[in-house]
Length: 218
Image (cartoon, rainbow, N blue to C red; front, side, top):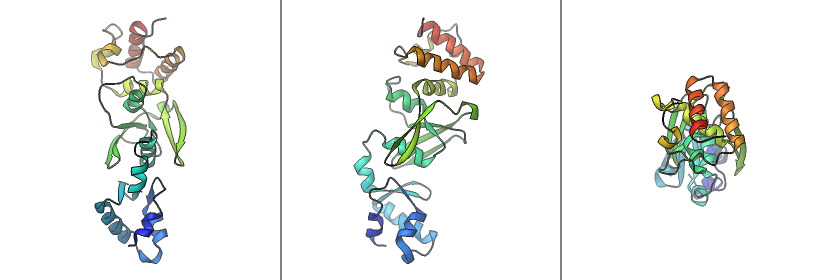
């Protein structure tokens, strides 16, 4: 396989087996042949395998891996029906500061993890009626969705087992979880409360009461 075929993908965020076969023409006769040829190039370090049938040229990776939106577009490529949320968004906004987390996203599909050379990507399931509270952005021609800060906090607390710590009469939940929530605006607090109402969960109502008692005082 000529490296000139792969060079066609240097400036693209990803390519598929179908796209590779189209560029290769008659030199690649089947998907199996394409997978074998691409597996050799992955082993040689010329390309990265993002998931089954989806690849990235190593030169694109080296040029852009430090870009702010790089992980976001990889997450969207891996699972388009998802939005970035949870620890990823909270850490970006200084709510969580102590450790490094994988790239976390929300989906209505099953919870699963994808590990590849670009990072660790965790997708958590949520009920369809709670699949909201995100905006759409774009980088390198790839659209991706990212939760608002209030929705990322809601998702984080909704999906985290908290036991008695979710009680409205316990100690400060934000303090116990080391969440920096003092800078939440009144609009963000109201947005969080809206998601609590939609969820209908006593756990989330208790969490809201706790946050209003200890952090979001009038």
